[in-house]
Length: 516
Image (cartoon, rainbow, N blue to C red; front, side):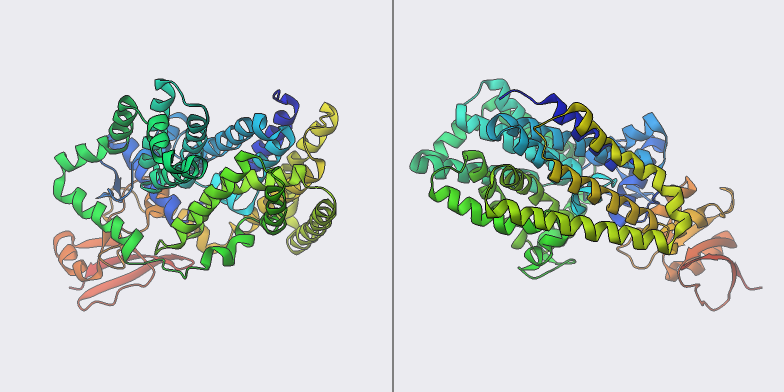
């Protein structure tokens, strides 16, 4: 099947505004985004790209690739919110077009473009493809490894393709750890076993791996860790061990087994509810022998992700993004091929969603007219894909799917623009503009020994503001005589005079002196 360039242009006309509008307007306040932003900033300032630091303290429990990519973005575009989020935007676009171009010859142009839109223009897609976190990077390498591995299993491949498979696995691991190995390898092994039964394991190993490919995988995935263990053995073992404990054992974000199904429709709105009719339709198609192999592979992939995430102690929204590639393939194909009552059901849902979304936007505009007037010109850019659709006269892209995607993007962007102005989200940026100069000894309160402080304050101040525990303040004042402290709760310590200089929401800037 030939590539439909007109449908790709319409996709691009939607995805670029959806991912770029207001990208730098939202302040940094989400903890995972702040950690990457400040760690990358300290890399650029110090020139040390091998040993990540956050608020001046070692941060070794996460792989370094997201820090490196963000630091590179800072080098090109300066240290700001937009540059923090550009790597996620780039990998979101790469994921969408990789998914579309890979599935186009296998499922047809309409199903492929549907899948690309579903991947990005959902609540969870826009949430993480517009955020300076590691999840968009991880998702790209997992999806790419699954696609390359599928082709290797189906047709075999030359040594270079097997090296590419190893490289993708290694870069995925360097993005966010073990999930980048577990999901592709278990999915591909399971697929090989289903296709070839007893010979599945041998076929999987022979087709997907080679000695050079394994060498690339181990060098890329574990080379930095090997260097770290050789250079900072005690620190590396402590931080890596702590991360393993937090992810798989201690349950700092522990949730019940059914947590992902409970939030599935919410995370993947407006498309998630279609998984129910898509599952029923796929079951009927499979019984008739007309379900494409790629869609059977996608259902298996979805099941592997569900099992792995459900039995991991910690469950968070960003992990659910890993469902997105197989879900997009399934729904893209369903929306393109299902007929009869399924089409009528889809249309009813789509129109109900569009009416509800436009009503919600109307309410937000009525509630805050001044903000609406500022933002509506930007939202007008989302008319570009609809205009492009008409001008290019493309018959490939589904207009109802495109319309729902445009309305979804508009609702998300307008809601984000309003919600990001809440005082607790802008507090660090506002307070940083009022801080004293670098000659003043400035610290921030450390709530407990495990917390490295608020990196957003350091990011916006443009310098490391080290955290200090309340119990260490007397000794620090003995040494310094006077310090300034950023804290949510001004300390009450005997023999110490605390002057409240300014407050922004819950953050207080205090000057501390020893009483004479």
